[in-house]
Amino acid sequence: MVLWRFKIPVRTQLRSALILAGTVSCLNCASLPRANPDGDVYLTGTIRDRDGRGVAGVHVLLDSADDDQTSGIGLPTDRDGSFRAYVRSGRYAPRIFTWGDARVPMAILDTLWLRPPRCRLDHQYGGVKIQGRLLGPDRRPVRSGGIQAMGRYPGGYGVSMKARVIKGHYVLFGPPSEYHFDCKPSQRWLPSMHGISINVSADTTIDFILDGDRIMGRVVLGGNPVDRAQITIDGSTHGSYPLLSAHEVTDRDGRFLVYLPRGGYSIIVSPGPNYAFVTPRFFSRVVTEPQSVTLDLLGASWRGTIRDTDTGSPIASAKVVATDIGSPFVSAFSVSDSKGRFRLVLQPGSRYVLSVTSAKKKFGLGPLAPIRAVGDSIITLNARVAGS
Image 1: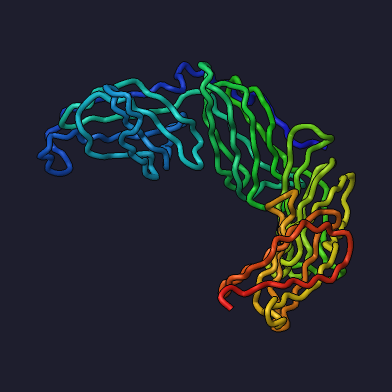
Image 2 (image 1 turned 135 degrees about the vertical axis):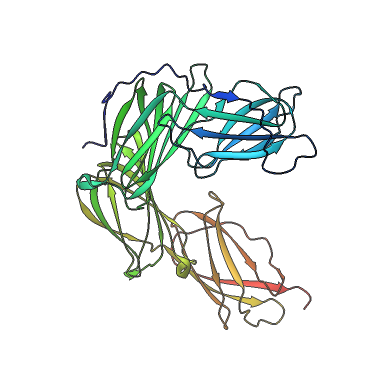
């Protein structure tokens, strides 16, 4: 099973331009865009990738070079990679800071003086070009997604770039380095891949293939479909890199579809909003071929009634919460009906603490010892309503 492939190099274009190289020019110009009574500098410039295309959405940060403060002026680039602003004259240490999806890394530029009336700061990235395709099963281009690459500059500083996948294609620019790639498609049913290490020393074409067997699944509760359940799948091929993950949401029939390469996986099913009374469930599966799987959330069923300690009357609209003491983020809740009845379905073998809350009333519920879910149980909770 081929998970990823690369061809290196398809085009070898060694360039003398360093990744930190840029050009700075200060121009005296009498015609400014607006009156400038404070004597500030009108600074303009453009940030371009190595192909000469403007880079949108990055920030040119101007830190004062004459003090120890790291805060400064942030100038965002527009869709053409250009920026413009009035700034105070002085000596600055400029950096290019990337936010979100940026096909170029952060860069530190040479210190420069800004003097009125006008200056220009341009930067074009050098380094290597990494491009290729993100493909799904049957080698079809993935419609959209992201490719992230993490490496290091020659001096040891970390570098990170992230490219948008558009109709299966992506482009990144960075220094020569060993990169760790993460591939995340927008289609949830395709596997994401993490931790693919490739040494890139020249212009390189890398095709990532998100391959796998077709897994048709269904989430049920005793045969009844569970809709809008969150499916999270994590694993690897034969217990090694790359790490893989997939996410999906069940439809109204409880069905879901994912593609998984052959290997071992852990599956977490978080029931949908209509099944909040069921705790998340953990499953293990080994994928060796295309298959259909049924994930049943049946467990220890706790049915009970919550009553007023003083009057014995049932308490309606109370939220009964069961929390796993071994995993505090794993819980389920049930809202009592007009007769004070509630239902919880819990992971067998786990120990749970019960609590009661309400948006309208305050309850005094004595401390309850953790209860192990070993089978179906009938539970009566007595709570004192505060102020009654």
